[in-house]
Amino acid sequence: MQLNVNDAQAIEVSELTFGGEFNETLVHQAVVAYMAGGRQGSKQQKTRSDVRGGGKRPWRQKGTGRARAGTIRSPIWRGGGTTFAARPQDHSQKLNKKMYRAAMRSILAELVRTDRLVVVQDFAVEAPKTKDLLNKLNGMGLTDVLIVSEGVDQNLYLAARNLPHVDVRDVQGSDPVSLIAYDKVLITVSAVKKFEELLG
Image (tube, rainbow, N blue to C red; front, top):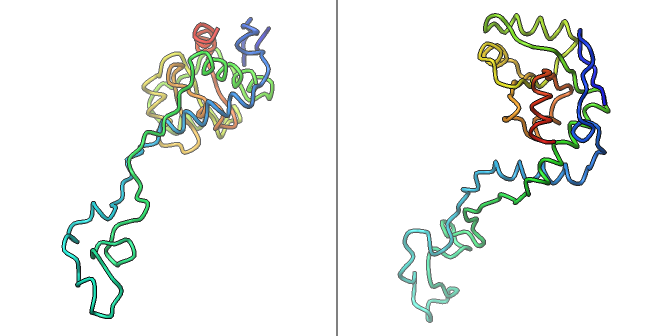
């Protein structure tokens, strides 16, 4: 299949990588797995046994007229432990490489189908100036955009760093979440070839 390139001749690309069907279930699974893998999972609360003190019973079992109490760290007491305390846990989910690659291909194909993939021969800025990059993107009618190149250009990265709706990634650093998060994905021809190489 052919992919249109801005201000250049259309390029021939793999039907497998850029022309497949959209597998919503698989993409959802890949996104959930990616997001879950980013969770720190270090939340921890104290149970009645973790809270300091409470070893001696506050008053004797019988004869006081009060309700029996064995520890001042009971969950129903102020300053007591938490009943079902949170514990650190690993939230990561296993996703096979084959499934991950299929999800990435599915996303790229959907970006092509919905005209959200903008292919350019090359994209760079001469100096790390945000104003220069903004003018360049405005000239192309792009406001909410992910820029993907084969390798991250330092000037481009520094120029985009302060723009809230612009992100710069290389092919290896692209993931399912970043590819679907932006209105448009601006990608260079060399990055397209790299995606074909990795996902083909």
